[in-house]
Structure formats: structure tokens, C-alpha cells
Length: 119
Image (cartoon, rainbow, N blue to C red; front, side, top):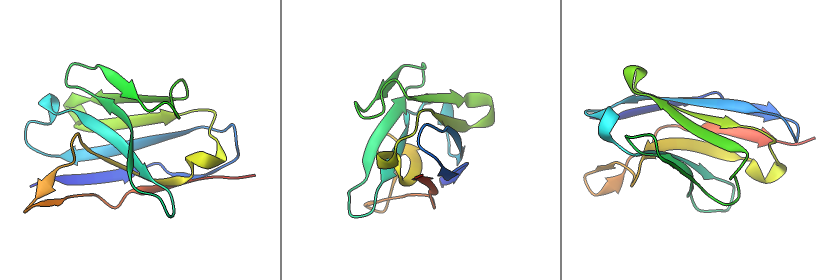
């Protein structure tokens, strides 16, 4: 059984910052590669950042240098620090394993957290 609870979204002006959190209830969290995904209206879901169990990170080119993913294995929590936000970052943000956790042949997702960047 897996539970993913995202929080920290909101509305900010361009150039602003937000910090997203994701509490994960899953077996062996510490050994899983975790990621932050986002889905903008009319678009598919994309992986924007990932972090391995050892702390290695990768980012989509669109967020590189602006977003930072981190994890606290003692708290089963993944974070996404987002700086210098742009209107094109507007989306619902989700955390999940990489690849996404599956239940009965379907990807399992939490409720996500909305990020809106506008002036």
C-alpha cells in the first residue's frame, strides 16, 4: 500500500519561490528513486526532477538551475524547492516513484498540489 500526499502549492508572481513537500507512505522508501512530476492543462504528465536513494539528482532542462529536489529518508518526505518561477511552470505537481508506482496495472497518483505563476 502506498500513499502520496503533496502539499505546498499556491499562487505566486513570476520570479517567486515555493517549496513543495510530499509525504510518502511506502515500504522501503529509502531505497526508492523518487521524482516530482507536473501536468499543465492540456498537456501530459512530465517528470521534472528525480532523486535516487543515494541522493543523485536529475532535472528536466526546463527547470534546471531553478528547481532543487531533496529527500529526508527519516521523515519519508521528498521536497521540491522552486525558485525564479515562470508562468510556464503553472501546473499540478505530483510526487511518485520513478517509474510511477503501479497498482493492478495502473499508475497510482496522489491528489497533487496546484502551482500557479502569474502576475
